[in-house]
Image (tube, rainbow, N blue to C red; front, top):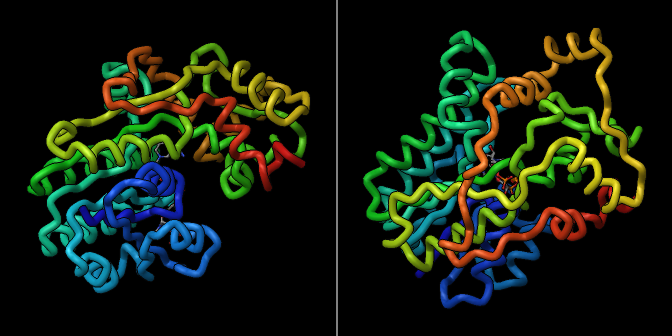
Length: 308
Ligand SMILES: NC(=O)c1ccc[n+]([C@@H]2O[C@H](COP(=O)([O-])OP(=O)(O)OC[C@H]3O[C@@H](n4cnc5c(N)ncnc54)[C@H](OP(=O)(O)O)[C@@H]3O)[C@@H](O)[C@H]2O)c1
């Protein structure tokens, strides 16, 4: 099979490329910068990397013109509340259908909380609430895949990536006090566990879908490797970094301010109200071996605050 991985230089797509490295499938990727270090690694592993952009339909058509059977994609949310992800997903699905692609695999997310908890909180939010708009877009993207009309589709639903606490481009945005002050400042309820996973493990399920398109057709695979309270996250980060990380206890006024101004903290606080679903899904049914959180932190040490 010819497999096009959109987002192959990222966590999910990169995990998929790794999982299929020694398979008989021919792998293709598309990157805005095929000369980047991550694209070079793909090429050295036999992946053909096209230059392109999800917003550039011609570049998608070019990559698909080699006779692609299966496409994996994920689309990044616009944190300013725009609809890039919706536009790009429509572009990708239209291009895939025009090229006669048989299988679509979408890297989505696991909705937080219990089913009822998610619905109750989501319903209670104002229509203009940023978090509601974010989840509305995610729900719409899932539906585009279900309605795509391709022969086989699969949606992969990972929980929060533990890499969010490590990778510089993410940490600087959501947890700037981790590398600087060794403080974990979270508005997740400290007593409610959250599911975590190695983001690249999502790619292992995508690879399983390529290998078993019929079995995974219409499956929406929810998975998580460990459910951790905020203190348990702190313990893992302390162990991986060798630094004493503290769980930050918010002074009342500062918390109030954060919940009015910081989109990430606002989101986590709202997610906490959705509760905790202990049954997020098991990997064994798909023949996937998940990476433990400690192992993932170890694998992501190089070049990050964990190692400095
Ligand atoms: N972070 C979390 O905790 C979490 C949890 C569950 C789900 N998710 C979801 O995961 C998705 C992100 O996946 P990820 O973390 O694997 O991605 P990532 O590591 O951030 O990498 C993004 C990938 O998308 C490609 N890309 C982005 N914009 C592009 C464009 N306009 N044209 C072509 N390629 C583009 C990048 O390729 P180039 O840079 O090479 O062009 C790169 O390969 C999001 O939808 C997010 O909601 C995240």
